[in-house]
Length: 239
Ligand SMILES: NC(=O)c1ccc[n+]([C@@H]2O[C@H](COP(=O)([O-])OP(=O)(O)OC[C@H]3O[C@@H](n4cnc5c(N)ncnc54)[C@H](OP(=O)(O)O)[C@@H]3O)[C@@H](O)[C@H]2O)c1
Image (cartoon, rainbow, N blue to C red):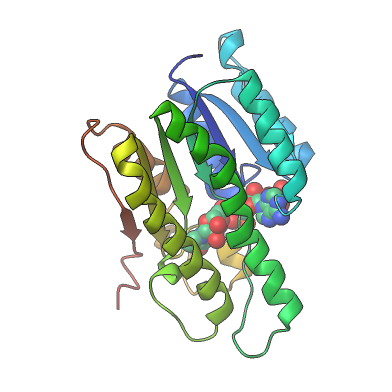
């Protein structure tokens, strides 16, 4: 097993996923970064490759996570090359404004990116982790995955789905040694928050490093402790 193990991070071309990939690489994991934007992935993996032993050099797979066939094939190939996978971070996701003013097509696309595609990663990776009786899974849900909010009903529905899937897997997998945690942050200082018209300034939001540090905290627990969910809120919007 290279270094501390293999960590797969989706949504690693920017925002939370990029920050988590950088942190886990610094902590001694061999990271596999996944997103669509090959140029950004190339740049990040190049930066992370500096001063790292050859066997820990990060790799990337540029793909759309809604291409489920390609995702399954890529993950199977990856698992033939590297076993066991120690960490899966499902961070790729998208924002969609609105509740009753959207089309079925846009809602379906949202559900595909935020729920069905993470499920495909879970199906491919969690089964192998279960066989190996080893692994950590982190699903980046949202505060909107535990509370509904006016004007964001469809996004919230997609994240409630992910939280439900994560919660169920947490219960299925704990006894076979695989720990599944749902992370539910409020506004995080990334491009998505800007797209979703956050009312908060950059420094008033949760920082991507807070998500990385939550993951680090869980990874440092003893084998007999597991965490179902972490809810992080902005100090300015706890009501
Ligand atoms: N920012 C917030 O306020 C906030 C709060 C709570 C939860 N979250 C959740 O946190 C996660 C990360 O969000 P973020 O804030 O880091 O957003 P971000 O900066 O917009 O990053 C989103 C990431 O997802 C990837 N992605 C999106 N659609 C994809 C697709 N179809 N195939 C492959 N990759 C795709 C993007 O890469 P490419 O464009 O290169 O494909 C990018 O790397 C999301 O699940 C989001 O819902 C965010």
